Image 1 (cartoon, rainbow, N blue to C red):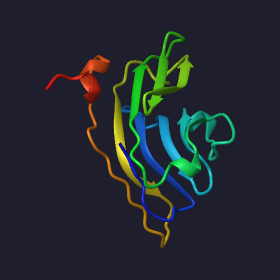
Image 2: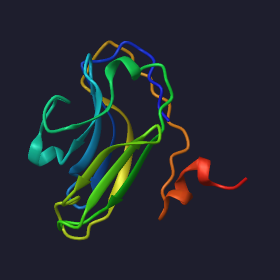
Image 3: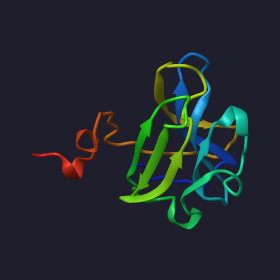
Length: 147
C-alpha cells in the first residue's frame, strides 16, 4: 500500500526489482509529475523516462496521491521466454508481460524500495505497508490469509 502525499518532484522511483550481480533494475516503479505511476521494464536496455512509451501504466495521475493502493507482483525470473510478470493494482491485473525477466543467468532478484529522485526542494512522502514475499498469492495477500 502506498499513499503519496505532497507536491511531487519531477521524477521519483518508488521501488525496483534488481538483479543482484549487476544491480540493474529489471522492473522499476516510477512517477513523473503530471504523468501516471508506471512500471518500467528493463531500465538499462530501454532507459525510458516516460510512462507514455514502452512502459506500463499502473495508476493514473489523478488517482495516485493521497490514497492507499495495493500492488501485487507475480513473477517468474528467467532469461528465457518462459518468464512472466503480472502486476495487480487494487486487485485488477494491469500488467501481463511474457518474456525474459532477468538479463543475467540465475542471479538473485531482490526488491529495493524507498524514495529515489533528483535533487529537489520539494518534499516527497510515501508509506509502505505489509510488504511480503512468498511462493503463492496466499502467502502474500492479506485478504486470502487466515486469522
